[in-house]
Length: 127
View 1 (tube, rainbow, N blue to C red):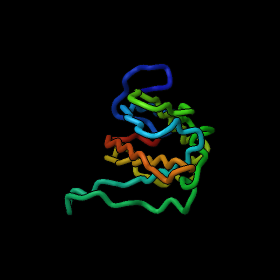
View 2 (view 1 turned 120 degrees about the horizontal axis):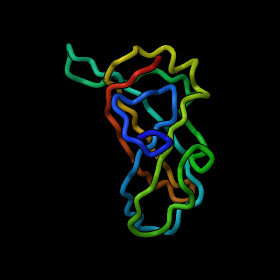
View 3 (view 1 turned 45 degrees about the horizontal axis):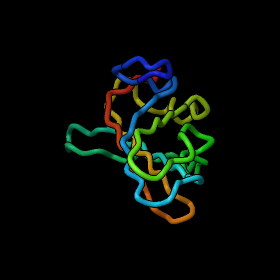
View 4 (view 1 turned 90 degrees about the vertical axis):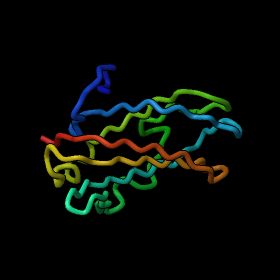
């Protein structure tokens, strides 16, 4: 969905991408989140996702400052994850336009090491 709450397909990696995720946090509230984002491209000839090199640009991000609603309280909750790739356009510009991609966001609770993994697969436009 767009940052204005409108559904969008294909997704566009030149603007903000909003994902809603149902979370069941069985531990204490999470206040410090490390965010790592992996991008994979669909290879139809081998029927598999190939992880692309991001040169560390999408690793070890401060999730609370990078589009994650913080803190994540204990219990069941739908959280909004906003991915803003505008500052990574040098990397995004290397991707193929109108191609299926997988975005996997790993949220790590810095206090416990517990992880939440959210995966989105969609055709993406780059230009």
